[in-house]
Image 1 (cartoon, rainbow, N blue to C red):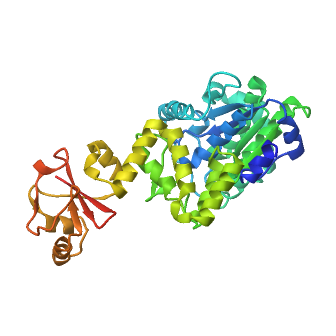
Image 2 (cartoon, rainbow, N blue to C red; image 1 turned 90 degrees about the vertical axis):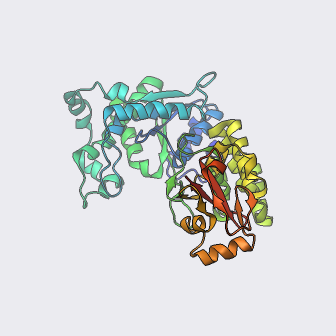
Image 3 (cartoon, one colour; image 1 turned 45 degrees about the vertical axis):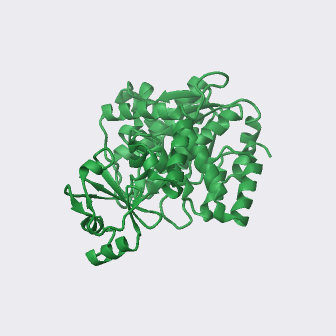
Length: 415
């Protein structure tokens, strides 16, 4: 199968302008771009599909441009419901620099068909209002813009002119990249279709009908249970190791349901279709082994956190489920216990009170029975002493004590 056929097999094609023309164009080396809004100082796993799509184009011999919206991020693409919180210029530029570092983990910025990192503040930031209105605003028909889904959905609830102008600014990005880098392809999520076609229309008006450009979108990733992709326990899974550590990142993928894992592999893994089909067979025949989940977790964790981060994540995972947690370093313990319930206790608290305070047990009677049954461990050692007290001097690093109920339920007592 050709490049676009493989993207279709992976579920990465929704809308394409001039499909046959794009297939023919991709037989030669092309330049393709995708934009990222710097609304935070880190991208998250919801951005991975587009980031890895740029990598796929680069691996196929094309030149990717990662465009950070240092200017458009000041406005924000119209959301389905309410207007975005406006950031300061300094916040947006800081976020753009952080995102550039993250993208360098996925794209090659040197050698043949080296990736290009751009920031639209470089050309939009110096433009006067008069230039914007005369050179670009006059080329957009209001009736045409009102047909865009992102705009149409907000008309009843209210849409500011600030957000209304976003599609023009993004169209100007495509035109600039076309003129500067001969960039002829823009990719994006399915919610970006209106912005892609606006850019193509602007290029046609400015450069003439002979300017051949294409837009291609991919469906947004969804979970089969209807919950939002990219969150764990209500928290975003970030690509910044300072925000989401390697263990949490690894566990997010390892816990993917069987109903979703093959779809995620197709969209996010760089493995060949044959390798993915083999993993899909494992899901069918031996789901308990979770081979597909492990494969994706290892691949993506190494991409984001490096080999050392992957090894740490695997070590913590193995130790928490099958080994001695006290063999881990305090930092590794903290990483593995990031989502565990925590209870701040007084020095010398009784184990019974700690179990109730940490909501391990509902009553002191239940706590006493658990201890007597040998179902409670303190810092890796089973404890059957109902008179046991917990002291800060005995805690890990004199900071925290780890309680375990049964085989997998961990709780943290801080002092």
